[in-house]
Length: 133
Image (cartoon, rainbow, N blue to C red; front, side, top):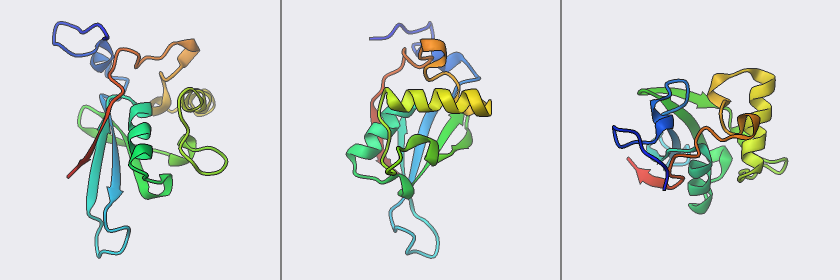
């Protein structure tokens, strides 16, 4: 189990430059409704969220992925999270893809996954949860 800070949470959750959590939205109507009806999936790590979605057999094209920074959603480009065949990437390939994307784009929402060989999220639980409405 990861070391917790005095607030009883992983140290990385105190780092405001990293997402506090990750959230996936899936329209349970599959685009057939007048408006989407979202199921929500959560994980403290992006790899945990992707694993949860994959276990639920949710395809990348059917999900919207967000980093949540202190209640503010930042959309992530799903194409960064998939392989050439369009399937979800898994650890460690996912981590490397995020690291490479951050190195090229400089977009902070992709930082920390394997930055310089160290995962900034290593102190977090990788379990995913959902669907939650």
